Structure formats: structure tokens, C-alpha cells
Image 1 (cartoon, rainbow over the protein chains, first blue to last red):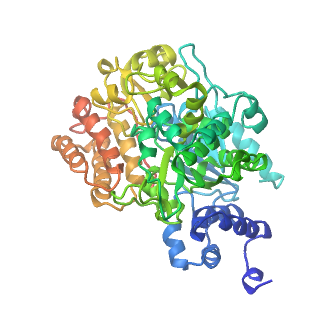
Image 2 (cartoon, each protein chain N blue to C red; image 1 turned 45 degrees about the vertical axis):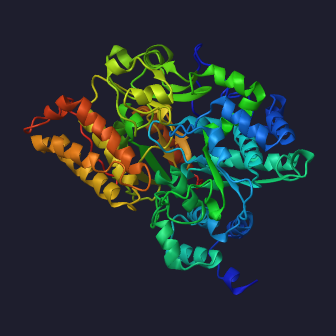
Image 3 (cartoon, one colour; image 1 turned 90 degrees about the vertical axis):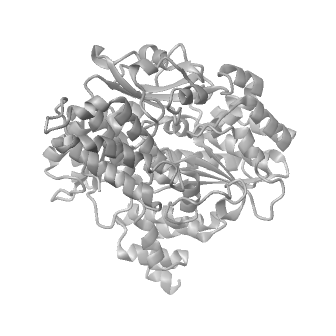
Length: 170
Length: 435
């Protein structure tokens, strides 16, 4: 095992994913954006260590990586809650109550845009269109879509995720 | 899970396999899948491009450029490898059609990509999906793996001596990456800022090689054209607008959903019959006909056929086919503010007229909607928007300016009703927290 591998913050599965991914492209750097997202999925956010490691693996400077990472809205530089609630308030959702859903969640969780609950279970984000316009209002919890939302439905969703969190699940 | 809708006026071509388990490769083949790719492989590039031209298919991403013509621009001989790039970054507010294609018919995307590759002499295709569509990316990845297993992708596709590789790529959140040159930048591992044109991607594209970039719906349509014949496909649509379109009707209608209707289908009928009319028996105030970047239409302007030419003649654009319907309780100033807030958030900052223009428009409209507007602001908003038009590398600047101009010009009275500290007549608020 090389020094780079022993010092890796990537799990073996993530490292393997990276190795497989770079093989696919004519240019190694094409793996950059996907790898930042996959690393965030595993580690929770794009930490300095993630930036260092991705830079080393891709073969570019950490500054290059940071320059790219800051462009993409899904990449974050501090931890979110275990369940990141992303509420769409763009036009189609707004017309069908997207802001009411966002306000309701702010009240229920006691946090605002990009806030994290004290127990770290939930974070909340107001996001731009997530491509669920015909099933509005909609939100994503991590990568899962929840659509045709009402306040009552949102409460049920929160209860479900709380139960999951209590069981230590993701 | 997105709800599928149906209406007797629909002509199901692209959506005909939806809800039939076609994400499974064997089921897809059972339903006639991959026959078109085989046919195209046997017939060769010239046949493919001629048929595509005859089909009248125009780009479903929004610009409406004839697909066959686009493919014909790729040089036959190239020192650098050629690429096919499928744009599944679907991010235009009001648009969720590709979402359903990835979910219910992923192999149609792969098959269309293979055909595009055969047409231009490419050995490699990329299918780029927005990062938020993770569950759809997983469906696409599974479909691609299955196609490799069957020998439909890889070296010697369908038992021939031709090679075609497909890679599924995830984005990480960026509307701008839906613009074709920014899409290539992103795929090359960079910030998604646009490139100047010319050179056009057909000549200098991905990794510097000639590249065809098509919207996911365009690509998913391709196999159907070869299955039913170009002439039959063209006959479904209106003049110079072949085939069908996946119209996503959202907002204040009784039955929102993605409906596949012939090109040229009447917009009024689409809203009042197909989508069941205005929700709760209210009356119509306005329609955004093709995604948030297309200028708004008043109720007296919607008796038009929904194709690229007719909507263009009506002063708007068919765009992405996302029809957003606004009822009489909607505040146009609030709606305009939410629209410009989106473009301000998504402007990549590369071109100053767009970066500064969207920001000032957002500031002006925020102040306006808060009741602190001045009469001259209305003209200022218009002036700002007009000065963004055509002054940027990519169409995002126009996409922000065009709808703003539409709102101000067509609903000026609503802006005036917000003047002199008068509260919003609809007593709503937008507190845009996005940063």
C-alpha cells in the first residue's frame, strides 16, 4: 500500500469508486465533480481533508479543487444534519405553497435556511427548482424526493426520519 | 414517486413505455427496444441523418434547433475523437419531463445515444444528469451496465465491429451547466462557465473534439423516429415542428402533470381541457409557456398552437415545454421577483451584464415588492433588462431579462399598484433566503 493510500480519508469503497471512475474518461480531471459529491456523501461535507485528497488523486492543486467545488450548490463546506431537508420554493412550487412548507419546517425545527438542529438530526435549506414541478410542492430529504406536500405530510415525514435517526439509520 | 397522468388527447410516442417496467432491459427489448439501433447500425450514418432531418425533430432543450441538421454539422473526418453528450441537467423552473424519461424509460436514452454516435462516427457518449437526480442516476447506471452485459454497448456492439462506450455523469447543482458549453466545462472537471462561440461544439467541443449535445428528451425521441418512420413521426406534429412534446403543466391547474401532446397543440385547450382548468374554479391571470425564462402570456394571448414557430410569433418561446399557470390571486411582482431571484442565484458571474443585471433586478424588485418602489423604478427595471439582452456569452442573461421585460410590459398596472407604500394587493411575501 502506498503512502497516499494509507493516509486516505476515503473508505476502501470510495477509493475503489474513484479508481474505477477515472478509467472511464479521456481526461482524469473529469472525475472531479462526481468525486467531490461522492466524498461529501461519505464524509458529510467537503472538508479541507477532502479537498487535499481529491486534489492528490486527480493530480491537480487543492486550490484548483476549491475553485471548482465552490461553484456547485450541492457541495457544502460544513456539515449538514443527518437528514438535509431541501425545500423547493421556485415558481411551480411557490404557486402551490412551497413557502408555506418552508415556513412550517422553520417553525417545527426552530432553524432557518442552512440551519442545523442542535441534535444534528435535521438541517434545512431553501433550494431552487429540483425538477418536480408537476408534483409540487416538493422537497428532497438528502436524495429522496417527497412531493405533493402538505403540512400534515411534512409532519409525518419528520416523524419517520426521527424514528430512523433514533435507530441509528441513515 | 412522481404521479403519471393521462388524457385522451395525448399521443404517446416517447411516453408509450412509461409505467410498463421498461427500465428492465429484457422488458425494454420485449417492447421493441434496441431495434432502431440495430436498424441504424445496418443502414449507416447517411441514412440516419437523412431520416432525422425528415422527422422534423427540433431540440427539446428549448432552442428548437433541428436535430438532424445539428448532427450533419459534425465533420466526417476528425483528428480528435468525437463525442455525444446528453444533457440531462434539467433545471429550468417549470420543467420535469426528463425526470420521467430517466425513471421509466432509461434505455431509450441509451439507444438514442448509440444512434447519435453512429450518425456522427463517435465511439463515446456521456449522459449527464443533474446531481439532485441521484436516484435517476442510479437507474441510468444500472441500465448502462445491463446494456454492456447484453453487448449493446462496448466493443463490437450488436455483434458488429463498431465500438460505443457510455458514461453516466453526475452534476453537483448548477442551472448554468444546462447550457451546452458550460456543460462541457463541467464534464471536464471545471467550473460551469460558458465558452464563447464560435467555435461551435460540433467542431470544437468536449475535450476539443467535435461534439453533438442534445437534450435528454430529444435523444429519447430518436429511437421512436426509426421505429415508426420519419415521415409518420413528422406527420404527428405541426408544420416544421415534427412529432410530440412532453409538456409539463404546473401551477394553478386542477390536474398538473407531464402530458405528451402533438406539437402545435392549442395552449388554451391544454390548460382548460387536458389539465382540467384553473384550480378551485378561479380565473386565469397569466401563463409562462415554456419554463421560467420564457416571456409571460396574458389570457387573451393563449389561443395559440404550442410549437416553436407559433409561440415565437406570439412573442414568447416554446422553451422547455414547462407550462406554468398563474391564477387571479397571484401577485405578478412577487412572481417576477421569485423568477429573477433564481437567475441571480444561478448566474455564474462570468459575464458582467448578467452578473450585475440579475443582481440589480433582484434588488429593485425586492424593494418594489416591499412597498418602497418609485415610479421611475418600473422604467429602470425595463432599462436594466433591455441592456442585458444579447450581451453575454450564454443565454442565461437573456433568460433572466426576457421574462422580466414581459412582466413589466404586460402587467405594468400591477407594478403601479405597489407604488407609494401601498401594501401588496395580494398580501403575500417573498423572503428570499437564498444566498
